Length: 221
Image (cartoon, rainbow, N blue to C red; front, side, top):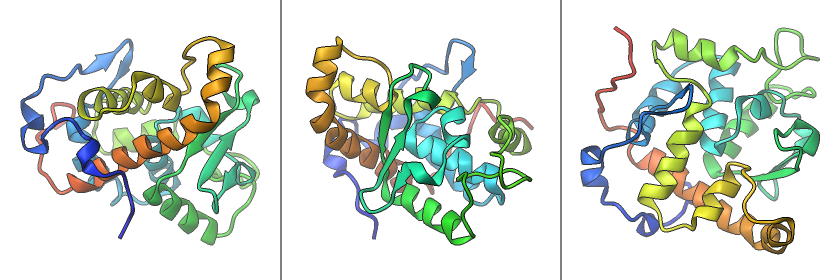
């Protein structure tokens, strides 16, 4: 049985989530309402291929697609359940440490078991990562009109609407700068464990509601 954040941390009652108005998109990144993500993730897990697994990791970690697709096995500490993305691969040029949930570790363990090269999500040529369009192609194949980046908005809306975690924790989980440099350095150590609890809450939410049938306005006929 997977361990995750206690659902008591969620502010909302799951029975009433569908009644809440949810912003559908931010900017040009079309996003899926977070209440629809569990059912979508259930469908995604039925999709074969490395691109589908990369998208699954992107959803579970709330990372940018480029950060996921360029991930190297050397960045992963399975024992500590941490993924350290070097500054050179981050949009803001700052190292980002991602706490890995049990479902994410399960996916990565299966991928590594298939024979690991340099990249977690290798392309047709093992020495190169998947194309930056790999996740988008999965969504198109599934006839879903959102972008991979939009799932970051889904996560942020979940954190803000359904948990009691501080705004700063959610923003840091998205690798957004919060506060000045001194404040960020002071918070860094403890914040990782608080972010782990937030990511566990997200994974638990996705797993708890995965079997629910939700009519998505983002699916193409």
